[in-house]
Each structure stands twice: as C-alpha cells, then as structure tokens.
Image (cartoon, rainbow, N blue to C red; front, side):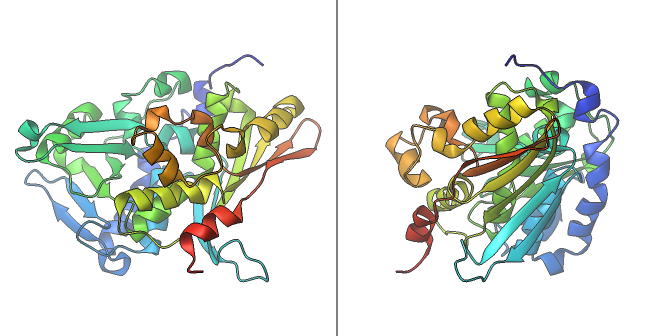
Length: 336
C-alpha cells in the first residue's frame, strides 16, 4: 500500500488547537490549588505551570494536561476496573474524532528543546515539547506532511522534564512561535509525578497514530480512535517512571481505530501491535538499559499499543491483533 500524507482538510486546517485549548489552560491556572499545581510568571509575563517539579500535582491535573496536549480535540477520563480479573484497578481512557490533528498535530512530543550549560548559566537542559504550540512553531517535518499550521495569538506547550525551563528555552519557544511573552503558557510535567504519569499514558492513541504513520498508511484513513491503558503509581526514579509509562502502553494498552477501507483495517490489526517488534517481551526500562539508554537503537516497531482493534467502514468488519501481557505489568508493579 503506497504511503501518502494527510491533506490540510483531513488534518483539520480550519481548527486552531491553541484556541481550542485556551479554556482548558485557564481552568488549570485559575484552579491551581485544586489541581495541586503551582503557577508563576517570568519577568516578561510568560506563565509557568509546575505540575510536579516542586509540587505534588495530581491525577486530575494530568487528565487536564492530557486534554490540553490534544488541543481540546479529545476526551480523557479515569475509570476503575475492579472486576474478578482486572488488568489494573485504575485505567486511563482516551477518545478523539480528530485523530490526526489531535494526536500528531498537537499531542505528539516531537519538538526537541535543548540548551547547553553555558546558555543556561548552570547545567544543560533538554526536554521534548508537546501540545498545541508545536503547531505555531512548525519546526518538525511532520507538519509539512500534515499540511497544517496554527496561527493563533496565544499558545501552550507541555514539557516532559524534571526542572523548570531556563530563560533561554522560554525565549526560544516565544521566538519560534511568534508570540508575545504574556501569550505563552508552559506546563512542566515530570514523568515521575502523578500528572506526568497520566499525561504520558494518555498518549495510548497517539502512539497508535504514530505507528500508523511509521507503517506508511495514509493518515486520513483513520477517522475515529479510542484507547485505554493502565495507570500505575509514579515511580520516584526517572528511568523507572519512564519504564512504567511505556510498559503501560506497550503491554497494557488497547486501541480501537475506525478506518475507511478493509485492507487497511486488516493490515493495521496485523502490523500495529507492539508484539511485532524484535524488542518485545522485556520491561521497557530493561530494553532501554540494554541499548545504553539510546532511544534510537530501540526497534521503532516496539512503540505501539499491545492490542489493536480496527473497524472498517467499507465492510463493517472489525479485526483484532496483538494481546495484553498482564504478567509483564504485574511483575513490575505489584508486591508479590
């Protein structure tokens, strides 16, 4: 099947992910005490939301941050599973009717932001930026494929890092986004925090959409997307926390995609699940360590949900591939 890119129409060119997320950002800032986050401002007026560096943060904050990451184009919720054989007692559910724009045009952590110790006046800084402001800066080739650019006058970016951003990074984001200082909000969510854990696991559908892209399937084939993954408690160690969030998706994540054509549905059910990877079967932290902590040495096919259900609008049939591996999760997360 030939690869193609999404057109501006299928990417949702008429929608502004930054405009749609504004009310959610205001909710987080205005009700900071409820969400257990801390709000501060730079000297120039940029808003910094600490959702887990020097504050406790919360699961509710993580849910709201995840919705912000999706540009206001998705639903994220927590539900309890206390049946006779639950995969895990707390699950994160995600749904979007704009899977290309919500997941790849906004939520995907694709903007690399780095500064040397000379630039920061201390230690070097690195973070991946995700969320609506990516579509203002359009620094990633992906936006050329999507045919999408947001031109709103206010933006929000989420940083997956364990420290607040230095001035040089704030200035870079402002410059690349073309925003006035007081029109930018930066939300910081360490993976070792409750909010950080939630917002990463809420990427279960985004991970599936990225795998669709890697497989070369036309993105506009996917018209609806839902997913679910277990929510473990955050780990205080950064590598372990990253391992838990990845394992939640790779071994416990399920997605349901609705696509246009039957051939696509069959192919995705067979090729999308993480079990198609040569590196499948070991906890992610172990895999990461075995490659000397170099992400780029890990088989890209591993980054996918454990199980895929794919429905075809053409035939009405639904195909299923992959499987949840509860043993990998419980061995890591439960006291035996």
